[in-house]
Each structure stands twice: as C-alpha cells, then as structure tokens.
Length: 253
Ligand code: NDP
Image (cartoon, rainbow, N blue to C red; front, side, top):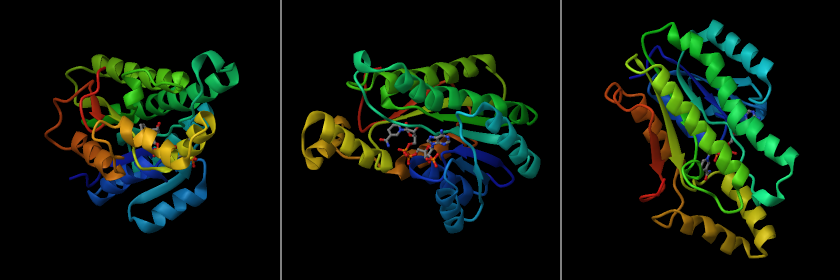
C-alpha cells in the first residue's frame, strides 16, 4: 500500500514510534526513524527491513533542518510524517519551575513544530501527504499532576487542527492520535515516579495507570500503529483535523 513512499517517524526507535515505523515499513514505505540514541535506532533497523536510522534531537532547530534535508535528499519527499517524539514527566503545575516547563514544551511542542515545519515543503511538492501527531488523552483533558505535559499535548492538537484548516480541500490530511496509557518505557518510568511521589508500591502505581484507561488495561503499541496505518490508507482522506482517541472508551474532551 505504501510502496515508494518515504515516511519520517520521530522517536521511531522505541515504543509507539517503533510500532508505527514497523507497520509502515511492512506496508512498503521507506521509513526514516530518528531519536537521540543511535543504539536504539540501529537495533530497530536491524530487526525490520526498510527502517533508516538518523540521530535527530527534536529540540535542536538547526539539527531538525539539517537531518530532514538530508533524509529528503536521500529518500525523496516526506509524504508521511509521524511527529511522535515526546517525554512524559509529571509535576503539579503550581510546583513546576520554569526549567521543567521549558523542557517539556521544548520536546513535545517545539519539537513537533520544528519537525512538521521542516518536512512540509517536501510533502507539498507531491500530490499526497499525511501528517500524524502523537498527542495524548492528556491533550484533550487535564492530567492530575501533569499540567505541563497536558498543556504541551493540547498545543500539538491546536497545531494539527490549524494545519488541517490551512490545507483544507488539498490532498494532505493532519490528524492527532490521542492514546491513553500504552505499554512502553514511559509506563516503566512513570511507575517509579508515581511510586515516589504518592508513596505507594510499584504494583499500585501500575494500577493507577491501568485503571485510568476506560477498559482497565494497558493499550498495546500495535493498537496505536494500526490506527496510524489506517490514517495512511487510500480511504481515510476524509478524516482531517481530528483527534483519534484510543483509550478503551469515551473520554470527555
Ligand atoms: P518512549 O519513551 O518509548 O518513546 C519516546 C521516543 O521519543 C523515544 O524513542 C525517544 O528517543 C524520543 N525522544 C524523546 N525526546 C527526544 C528528543 N529531544 N529528540 C528526539 N527524540 C526524542 O515512549 P512512548 O513510545 O510511550 O512515547 C511516544 C509518544 O507517545 C510520546 O510523545 C508520548 O508523549 C506519547 N504518549 C505515550 C503514552 C503512553 O502511555 N506510553 C500515552 C499517550 C501519549 P531518544 O530517547 O533516543 O531520543
């Protein structure tokens, strides 16, 4: 289905990004995967044909320009862009210092902005394109103890909705995927942080996240990847400017 297409997945060496990169490659795309750790990217590329690793820190505007420019030169225009790289760290907003706020915004919001802006010109030189941002359920509602994260993910949705308006009626779509808690390293790291902050056991910390999903289980990365693949299918062209919520049930937005 995606033969001849060049995709870029930021944070494509692990977790949700890796699952999306794999499914796009399995469907014929050449997939540039980026992140800050070459070992993770190379391990991913070693396991799945079609993945092309490159170091790119999304907070570094000039690196984003250079790396995307080089990837386009080597593999052609980026027609599928998945802005996935992100960090999830929690602090109550009234206790959030500016450095922490900037760190979350620099990765989750500035990073998605730089990536989309730098990839768009190549996409616009073609007659088909898909931009998918991995936001979060915390992008459509507040997150207790995670104000900066929630604000960054709301911001991503605002960008995607605006892009959909900017290019309305043209052969490009812009959508956000908003997962609940997905089984990745973020969960492992969250267990430690919730455990320490709430003074509870690791088991109870995991339960906090499992119970937060409406169907009371963690979501698999494959479930998110299948949704991304559908957004790249020939029959999803009328889905534009949306937030696809994958959280086991209805979530008030
Ligand atoms: P991971 O930690 O496995 O993935 C995050 C990826 O982002 C890593 O590959 C990491 O690579 C990359 N990354 C982080 N910071 C940077 C940076 N400055 N520059 C470039 N790459 C960076 O966790 P997930 O797969 O769970 O997270 C993926 C996305 O999904 C995130 O945006 C997250 O907010 C979102 N999400 C996750 C949920 C979950 O429950 N897991 C729920 C809702 C949303 P490296 O460290 O090598 O740079």
